[in-house]
Amino acid sequence: MNDQVTSEVAVSGSKRTAPPPIERIPVLRWARENLVSTPFNAVVTAICLVGLIYFLPGFIEWGLIDAVFVTSDHKVCRAAEGACWAVVGEKHRPMFFGIYPYEEHWRLLIAVAIYLGAIVMTMMPKFWSYRILVPVWIFTLASTLTLMWGGILGLSEVDTSQWGGLPLTMILFSGTLVIGFPLAVLLALGRRSHMPAVKAVCVVFIESLRGVPLITILFVAVNVFPLFLPQGLEFDKLLRVVVGMAIFFACYEAEVIRGGLQAIPKGQYEAAEALGLGYWQIMIRIILPQALRICLPGIVNHIIAAFKNTSFVLIIGLFDILTATTAVMQDPEWRRFTLEAYICVGLVYFMFCFALSKYSQLVERWLGEGKRF
Amino acid sequence: MSDQSTAEPVIQLVNLNKWYGDFQALCDVNMTIHRGERVVVCGPSGSGKSTMIRCINRLEHHQKGEIIVDNIELTDNLKNIEAVRSEVGMVFQSFNLFPHMRVIDNLTLAPMLVRKMPKADAEEIAMQYLERVQIPEQAYKYPGQLSGGQQQRVAIARSLCMQPRIMLFDEPTSALDPEMIKEVLDVMVELADDGMTMIVVTHEMGFAKTVADTMVFMDKGEIVEIATPDVFFTKPKNERTQLFLNQILTH
Image: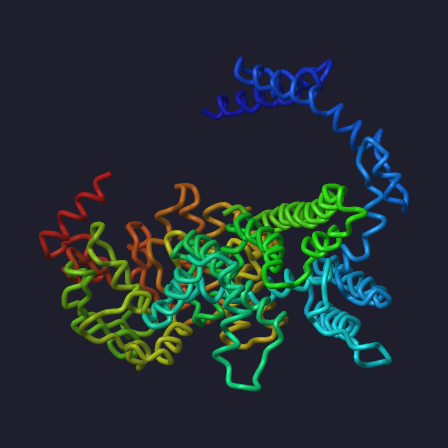
């Protein structure tokens, strides 16, 4: 018995010392495994290659070779064969900042910079501490709102109805998350509650609002909701829109989180209960950290959707970056080059969403370290 | 234990009944456990042994009868439930460690949240108990990096950190590979030697013989026989007990 064991160890030991087979050209192996591994894959590869050969040169010619990058004269663009990227340079300020007073745009620029800085800090684990993040966000909110609203420190006052462009998109998005995410967690927990009344309220809330298009909710928030308010009491339109979007977001996100909650074994609750922990202690310390990690891909999915949903405010007369661009492109001199402007806005959306998805993958890796379930 | 009759009763089950839907899981269970007593509960699967000990810290709630733990009656009163739970530790078959926390955080969580203990004190106590279950070197790992036997020892240490006066064990070795059972049983024997009041649901009859003051045999939701280990293993009175012992001891 003993001999057998040692000889086995010796065999596996000698195997382990053998070098892996040498690959001459790794790229070829990659191509073989990924592009032509089966006849079907080979056909798909061929179709894609033909497609690329057909479309790519045309696109490069239009987008790069014949394109006009810098000019302030729309006639130069009209004369050229290719794309007119100069339109972005010409119109970027109203595109990115909407109808906000032109000479005050510097305030928005600083606000966006502060805001992005705070977000980047929040995303880095080395700053994950209340002592750092709470003051940072208090400063961020105070400074950005002061900059945008004005009315003090010699800054002229700008009404929220004039806010627009990228800052508006970012306000809508972060407002949706800040209000919507905690609401989603509460709705998810409420739907699994043992208290019948709480459960009923959450189920009705989620199911009724989930079945309504976002546009309807925005209409109600902007046009119908004020009718129910007593005379004289009025909430800011922007605030109503943000709350409407947050509720819509929360209803979807709650169901995703509920999925994560269901994946937690009953034993986790029992162990925590047996230790004497109360309901909220169990949820906050034991259940939610595990559940949120499990459904992180789904959560981020809806966060990305929420970012793009901000463009719906077009129908209620707020000028987010997309609507602002549409409005600017009414200019007859530059109208022909709307496509180029939209491609630029599309890139902005893509950068935000791609960064979000990459970041969520990072978080998943951090949370997964050494924690096999 | 000769002084058992004089020691104060800490757990009293009086005509305990429990149903799951129409199925009666516990049927008029009566039992009194005194301070320092070590009770081993055995019986075929589905006999209600786990249900009974889970009732004692209200992980299951009973529909009829009384459970009195340390002079506190278990009812729907949340205060009473919390008071009992902080006195009663429980170890599960499937360990139920919190996988997203390091071992040390698993141990300090409840003392800090429930007992409002400062972090440094909680960590000191945690390290004491980890040394007692002989795995202080694993303190900064995650549960998933430990073997089953180590995880169960962490689970025992986690319960002990609340400094309970009673420990419940629900088949603590049933999910373990054979070579790890001993390391967990050793810890439990040591705990018993220190005078902890223990109720253990287990099929480890060797452990029962060395540790138990009282053997309880359950079948179909009833307590069939209560006896000292000597009597229980050599001349059980009830037929069902004899049959059960024959089945598990003949291997």
